[in-house]
Length: 426
Image (tube, rainbow, N blue to C red):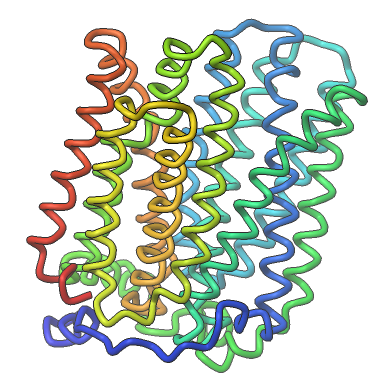
């Protein structure tokens, strides 16, 4: 991409006219996409509840940790491949292949469990493949959004989509836990496989008319913006090198994950266990508050897109995130802790929608899948690193030091962000 063209891509854009948070639901293809994704996410969460009990039947905690690591590695490996395939074919085709393949893998795992053998190696391989297929799906899912919705409804569409996923993430483990108490693990996996088949059906129900009208990848010509695969590859790297906003979003997203993502999953449970006699119950309440904040932030980010400078809003949210982390261990009482964790969730939800929408708006259609894959890969890969680092700080310096380090790290990210002209003018 030439420098003048890239300057246009990163140029400030006027605020978009408000259409209402639920306006995207008037589009038939969007409704089918979101309903299928909500259902499959629900099945995934139920599966994650069943997985530890399946592993621990024949293995130990070390086996469980290894298999969960394989799941995460699979996601990281699959994401860039999903981005490349989305640009080469169409995002909907990649999602369809991913859903059908995941249903087939789950059917194999059901047969493995039913055989009664040890099978931990094959279970780990199957879980890793599931992770890779999920990695294929995610960038395609976000890359298809601009082809389904007009630009003025894109932020609201992202907000609605993320909101239903959050609901599925919250409800899935609850239902999965109830199911595990009353039925066999294989039945939970069978339900998960069924959700993927239904999700594939919703993708087939999408007409794709708007995608074809916009010339989305894979809907008309094999290579919509150039002479071949080499041109498509160079187009992505040209965009990545030239777009200061793309670089800033990746840097800030990765840095935020590294500095703070591990705090909620590692440092927070240690803190409540030390401070409260009923630490497990308190931690559950705090996670509920975080989930409620995440849902609120996700929904609020859609209408908030009317502001003329979303970049300033994003930096302000990062500052709020850092201050909440610094204050968390010093707040008196459970109510204050719940408010603080709700604020953390709200910031995470809003920042996610702002980042996704900015990337969707500036990415050329021919490389949009790889742009979304880069964002997905950075956020996925940074989490286990953050968890490991936070764990070392908690072990060596204490839980309060971990929150101070995380909060200060987030504030440093906000300073770096505000110094970036591309962020200020986004």
